[in-house]
Image (cartoon, rainbow, N blue to C red):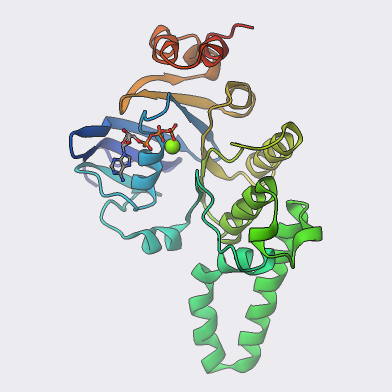
Length: 272
Ligand SMILES: Nc1ncnc2c1ncn2[C@@H]1O[C@H](COP(=O)(O)OP(=O)(O)OP(=O)(O)O)[C@@H](O)[C@H]1O
Ligand SMILES: [Mg+2]
Protein backbone atom coordinates (compact mmCIF):
# COMPACT_ATOMS: atom_id res chain seq x y z
CA UNK A 1 0.00 0.00 0.00
CA UNK A 2 1.03 3.59 -0.60
CA UNK A 3 2.88 5.51 2.10
CA UNK A 4 0.66 6.67 4.94
CA UNK A 5 -2.53 4.78 3.95
CA UNK A 6 -5.01 5.28 6.83
CA UNK A 7 -5.37 2.68 9.59
CA UNK A 8 -8.40 0.35 9.52
CA UNK A 9 -10.07 2.02 12.49
CA UNK A 10 -9.81 5.38 10.69
CA UNK A 11 -13.11 6.11 8.94
CA UNK A 12 -12.04 9.35 7.32
CA UNK A 13 -8.69 10.89 6.66
CA UNK A 14 -8.21 14.38 5.22
CA UNK A 15 -4.67 15.03 3.96
CA UNK A 16 -3.14 18.45 3.39
CA UNK A 17 -6.33 19.92 1.94
CA UNK A 18 -6.33 23.43 0.44
CA UNK A 19 -9.36 25.19 -1.04
CA UNK A 20 -9.13 28.63 -2.64
CA UNK A 21 -11.72 31.00 -4.06
CA UNK A 22 -10.51 34.04 -6.01
CA UNK A 23 -8.26 35.64 -3.42
CA UNK A 24 -9.69 33.75 -0.39
CA UNK A 25 -8.02 30.70 1.10
CA UNK A 26 -11.02 28.90 2.61
CA UNK A 27 -9.05 25.84 3.77
CA UNK A 28 -5.29 25.87 4.16
CA UNK A 29 -3.16 22.71 4.27
CA UNK A 30 -5.58 20.99 6.63
CA UNK A 31 -5.09 17.40 7.82
CA UNK A 32 -7.13 15.39 10.30
CA UNK A 33 -8.65 11.95 10.83
CA UNK A 34 -11.87 10.57 12.23
CA UNK A 35 -11.93 7.25 14.08
CA UNK A 36 -14.72 4.68 13.93
CA UNK A 37 -17.61 5.68 16.18
CA UNK A 38 -16.06 9.04 17.00
CA UNK A 39 -17.88 12.37 17.24
CA UNK A 40 -15.51 15.11 16.12
CA UNK A 41 -16.51 18.74 16.57
CA UNK A 42 -15.23 21.44 14.23
CA UNK A 43 -15.29 24.92 15.73
CA UNK A 44 -14.06 28.32 14.59
CA UNK A 45 -15.26 31.87 13.95
CA UNK A 46 -17.49 32.75 10.98
CA UNK A 47 -15.67 32.23 7.70
CA UNK A 48 -13.02 29.95 9.28
CA UNK A 49 -13.59 27.32 6.56
CA UNK A 50 -15.69 24.75 8.47
CA UNK A 51 -18.44 24.31 5.86
CA UNK A 52 -15.85 24.24 3.07
CA UNK A 53 -14.24 21.22 4.77
CA UNK A 54 -17.58 19.34 4.75
CA UNK A 55 -18.11 20.38 1.12
CA UNK A 56 -14.77 18.78 0.22
CA UNK A 57 -15.61 15.60 2.13
CA UNK A 58 -18.95 15.09 0.40
CA UNK A 59 -17.65 16.23 -2.98
CA UNK A 60 -19.43 19.57 -3.49
CA UNK A 61 -16.05 21.31 -3.62
CA UNK A 62 -12.91 20.04 -5.33
CA UNK A 63 -9.88 21.07 -3.26
CA UNK A 64 -6.95 22.55 -5.19
CA UNK A 65 -4.65 20.33 -3.16
CA UNK A 66 -4.93 17.37 -0.84
CA UNK A 67 -6.74 14.06 -0.57
CA UNK A 68 -9.77 12.59 1.17
CA UNK A 69 -9.72 8.92 2.21
CA UNK A 70 -12.95 7.23 3.29
CA UNK A 71 -12.78 3.70 4.72
CA UNK A 72 -9.26 3.36 3.36
CA UNK A 73 -10.23 4.37 -0.20
CA UNK A 74 -9.10 7.57 -1.93
CA UNK A 75 -12.37 9.34 -2.81
CA UNK A 76 -10.81 12.70 -3.75
CA UNK A 77 -11.98 12.43 -7.35
CA UNK A 78 -15.43 10.91 -6.81
CA UNK A 79 -18.51 13.09 -7.52
CA UNK A 80 -21.01 13.77 -4.67
CA UNK A 81 -23.51 11.01 -5.63
CA UNK A 82 -20.76 8.39 -5.67
CA UNK A 83 -19.59 9.54 -2.23
CA UNK A 84 -23.18 9.29 -0.96
CA UNK A 85 -23.30 5.71 -2.25
CA UNK A 86 -20.15 4.87 -0.29
CA UNK A 87 -21.96 5.98 2.88
CA UNK A 88 -21.37 9.72 3.42
CA UNK A 89 -24.50 11.71 4.35
CA UNK A 90 -24.89 15.27 5.54
CA UNK A 91 -27.19 18.01 6.71
CA UNK A 92 -26.81 21.62 5.60
CA UNK A 93 -26.25 24.93 7.35
CA UNK A 94 -29.15 26.32 5.29
CA UNK A 95 -31.87 23.70 5.13
CA UNK A 96 -31.97 21.97 1.74
CA UNK A 97 -35.22 19.96 1.66
CA UNK A 98 -37.97 19.68 -0.97
CA UNK A 99 -40.31 22.30 0.54
CA UNK A 100 -43.46 21.23 -1.32
CA UNK A 101 -43.10 17.56 -0.50
CA UNK A 102 -44.23 15.94 2.74
CA UNK A 103 -42.02 14.92 5.63
CA UNK A 104 -42.44 11.27 4.62
CA UNK A 105 -41.52 11.96 0.99
CA UNK A 106 -38.48 14.02 1.99
CA UNK A 107 -37.14 11.29 4.25
CA UNK A 108 -37.95 8.63 1.64
CA UNK A 109 -35.84 10.63 -0.84
CA UNK A 110 -32.83 9.75 1.33
CA UNK A 111 -33.49 6.09 0.42
CA UNK A 112 -32.74 6.82 -3.25
CA UNK A 113 -29.12 5.76 -2.85
CA UNK A 114 -30.41 2.28 -1.95
CA UNK A 115 -33.25 2.15 -4.47
CA UNK A 116 -31.38 1.70 -7.74
CA UNK A 117 -30.74 -1.96 -6.97
CA UNK A 118 -34.37 -2.41 -5.86
CA UNK A 119 -35.70 -1.13 -9.16
CA UNK A 120 -33.47 -3.58 -10.96
CA UNK A 121 -34.86 -6.26 -8.66
CA UNK A 122 -38.43 -5.30 -9.65
CA UNK A 123 -37.65 -6.10 -13.27
CA UNK A 124 -36.30 -9.51 -12.38
CA UNK A 125 -38.87 -10.60 -9.83
CA UNK A 126 -41.86 -8.46 -8.85
CA UNK A 127 -42.24 -10.03 -5.40
CA UNK A 128 -38.67 -9.14 -4.53
CA UNK A 129 -39.32 -5.54 -5.61
CA UNK A 130 -42.44 -5.32 -3.43
CA UNK A 131 -40.52 -6.54 -0.43
CA UNK A 132 -37.83 -3.96 -1.12
CA UNK A 133 -40.39 -1.13 -1.23
CA UNK A 134 -41.82 -2.34 2.09
CA UNK A 135 -38.36 -2.43 3.60
CA UNK A 136 -37.73 1.19 2.53
CA UNK A 137 -41.06 2.31 4.00
CA UNK A 138 -40.34 0.48 7.22
CA UNK A 139 -36.91 2.11 7.55
CA UNK A 140 -38.47 5.55 7.02
CA UNK A 141 -41.13 4.86 9.66
CA UNK A 142 -38.41 3.87 12.14
CA UNK A 143 -36.63 7.19 11.51
CA UNK A 144 -39.88 9.14 11.95
CA UNK A 145 -40.36 7.39 15.32
CA UNK A 146 -36.77 8.00 16.36
CA UNK A 147 -37.05 11.74 15.63
CA UNK A 148 -40.51 11.98 17.24
CA UNK A 149 -42.09 13.64 14.21
CA UNK A 150 -45.06 11.26 13.69
CA UNK A 151 -47.48 14.20 13.99
CA UNK A 152 -45.93 15.85 10.94
CA UNK A 153 -45.38 12.86 8.65
CA UNK A 154 -47.94 13.99 6.02
CA UNK A 155 -47.31 17.74 6.36
CA UNK A 156 -45.61 19.66 3.59
CA UNK A 157 -42.18 20.74 4.80
CA UNK A 158 -42.72 24.39 3.80
CA UNK A 159 -45.54 24.63 6.39
CA UNK A 160 -43.45 23.38 9.30
CA UNK A 161 -41.53 25.33 11.95
CA UNK A 162 -37.78 25.65 11.39
CA UNK A 163 -36.86 23.28 14.23
CA UNK A 164 -38.99 20.49 12.75
CA UNK A 165 -37.47 21.08 9.32
CA UNK A 166 -34.02 20.60 10.88
CA UNK A 167 -35.18 17.24 12.27
CA UNK A 168 -36.51 16.23 8.85
CA UNK A 169 -33.14 17.04 7.33
CA UNK A 170 -31.46 14.77 9.84
CA UNK A 171 -34.10 12.14 9.02
CA UNK A 172 -33.30 12.27 5.33
CA UNK A 173 -29.57 11.89 6.02
CA UNK A 174 -30.26 8.91 8.32
CA UNK A 175 -32.44 7.30 5.64
CA UNK A 176 -29.25 6.91 3.62
CA UNK A 177 -27.98 4.59 6.39
CA UNK A 178 -24.66 6.42 6.38
CA UNK A 179 -21.36 5.22 7.75
CA UNK A 180 -20.28 8.83 8.18
CA UNK A 181 -22.67 11.63 9.07
CA UNK A 182 -21.68 15.28 8.54
CA UNK A 183 -23.76 17.78 10.54
CA UNK A 184 -23.41 21.47 9.67
CA UNK A 185 -24.87 23.51 12.54
CA UNK A 186 -27.83 21.16 13.13
CA UNK A 187 -29.00 23.23 16.12
CA UNK A 188 -28.69 26.74 14.69
CA UNK A 189 -31.91 28.71 15.11
CA UNK A 190 -33.51 26.09 17.37
CA UNK A 191 -35.26 26.66 20.70
CA UNK A 192 -33.61 25.37 23.88
CA UNK A 193 -35.95 22.33 23.94
CA UNK A 194 -35.33 21.55 20.28
CA UNK A 195 -31.57 21.78 20.86
CA UNK A 196 -31.86 19.34 23.76
CA UNK A 197 -33.78 16.91 21.52
CA UNK A 198 -31.19 17.20 18.77
CA UNK A 199 -28.37 16.61 21.28
CA UNK A 200 -30.18 13.48 22.49
CA UNK A 201 -30.52 12.12 18.94
CA UNK A 202 -26.85 12.76 18.19
CA UNK A 203 -25.75 11.03 21.40
CA UNK A 204 -27.98 8.05 20.68
CA UNK A 205 -26.63 7.78 17.15
CA UNK A 206 -23.12 7.62 18.55
CA UNK A 207 -23.73 5.47 21.61
CA UNK A 208 -26.36 3.02 20.39
CA UNK A 209 -25.57 2.86 16.68
CA UNK A 210 -21.84 3.66 16.83
CA UNK A 211 -22.17 6.14 13.96
CA UNK A 212 -19.07 8.19 13.09
CA UNK A 213 -19.89 11.90 12.90
CA UNK A 214 -18.47 15.36 12.32
CA UNK A 215 -20.41 18.17 13.98
CA UNK A 216 -19.99 21.86 13.18
CA UNK A 217 -21.58 23.90 15.93
CA UNK A 218 -21.17 27.42 17.31
CA UNK A 219 -22.80 26.67 20.68
CA UNK A 220 -19.75 25.86 22.84
CA UNK A 221 -21.88 24.29 25.58
CA UNK A 222 -23.27 21.78 23.09
CA UNK A 223 -19.87 21.05 21.57
CA UNK A 224 -18.22 20.59 24.98
CA UNK A 225 -20.98 18.21 26.10
CA UNK A 226 -21.21 16.06 23.00
CA UNK A 227 -17.88 15.80 21.24
CA UNK A 228 -15.11 13.28 21.84
CA UNK A 229 -12.55 15.55 20.23
CA UNK A 230 -12.43 19.06 18.78
CA UNK A 231 -10.69 20.59 15.81
CA UNK A 232 -10.50 24.39 15.87
CA UNK A 233 -10.04 26.40 12.67
CA UNK A 234 -9.28 30.03 11.89
CA UNK A 235 -8.65 31.49 8.43
CA UNK A 236 -8.76 28.00 6.93
CA UNK A 237 -6.03 26.63 9.19
CA UNK A 238 -6.11 24.17 12.04
CA UNK A 239 -5.20 26.10 15.18
CA UNK A 240 -5.87 23.36 17.74
CA UNK A 241 -7.00 19.72 17.92
CA UNK A 242 -7.59 17.40 20.87
CA UNK A 243 -9.80 16.83 23.92
CA UNK A 244 -12.57 19.49 24.14
CA UNK A 245 -11.32 21.00 27.42
CA UNK A 246 -7.81 21.46 26.07
CA UNK A 247 -8.96 22.99 22.79
CA UNK A 248 -11.37 25.33 24.58
CA UNK A 249 -8.51 26.70 26.66
CA UNK A 250 -5.93 26.84 23.87
CA UNK A 251 -4.56 30.41 23.62
CA UNK A 252 -4.92 30.50 19.80
CA UNK A 253 -8.57 29.45 20.07
CA UNK A 254 -9.34 32.14 22.64
CA UNK A 255 -7.51 34.69 20.47
CA UNK A 256 -9.45 33.62 17.35
CA UNK A 257 -12.75 34.19 19.12
CA UNK A 258 -11.76 37.52 20.70
CA UNK A 259 -12.54 39.26 17.43
CA UNK A 260 -16.02 37.72 17.63
CA UNK A 261 -18.92 38.62 19.85
CA UNK A 262 -17.64 38.93 23.47
CA UNK A 263 -19.95 36.20 24.83
CA UNK A 264 -18.57 33.60 22.45
CA UNK A 265 -14.99 34.36 23.51
CA UNK A 266 -16.00 33.87 27.16
CA UNK A 267 -17.68 30.57 26.33
CA UNK A 268 -14.59 29.38 24.51
CA UNK A 269 -12.40 30.42 27.44
CA UNK A 270 -14.75 28.49 29.72
CA UNK A 271 -15.79 31.71 31.45
CA UNK A 272 -19.25 32.73 32.72
N1 LIG B 1 -18.52 28.87 -3.00
C1 LIG B 1 -17.76 29.86 -2.53
N2 LIG B 1 -17.37 30.87 -3.32
C2 LIG B 1 -16.58 31.87 -2.86
N3 LIG B 1 -16.12 31.93 -1.59
C3 LIG B 1 -16.48 30.94 -0.75
C4 LIG B 1 -17.31 29.85 -1.18
N4 LIG B 1 -17.50 29.00 -0.12
C5 LIG B 1 -16.82 29.55 0.90
N5 LIG B 1 -16.21 30.71 0.53
C6 LIG B 1 -15.39 31.57 1.38
O1 LIG B 1 -14.50 30.73 2.09
C7 LIG B 1 -14.35 31.17 3.44
C8 LIG B 1 -14.80 30.04 4.37
O2 LIG B 1 -16.21 29.87 4.26
P1 LIG B 1 -16.99 28.72 5.02
O3 LIG B 1 -18.41 28.83 4.60
O4 LIG B 1 -16.31 27.44 4.79
O5 LIG B 1 -16.80 29.17 6.55
P2 LIG B 1 -17.51 28.65 7.87
O6 LIG B 1 -16.44 28.38 8.86
O7 LIG B 1 -18.44 27.54 7.56
O8 LIG B 1 -18.33 29.94 8.35
P3 LIG B 1 -19.74 30.07 9.13
O9 LIG B 1 -19.43 29.80 10.59
O10 LIG B 1 -20.13 31.50 8.91
O11 LIG B 1 -20.69 29.10 8.52
C9 LIG B 1 -15.20 32.43 3.57
O12 LIG B 1 -14.36 33.54 3.38
C10 LIG B 1 -16.21 32.29 2.46
O13 LIG B 1 -16.64 33.55 2.01
MG1 LIG C 1 -20.49 27.29 7.73
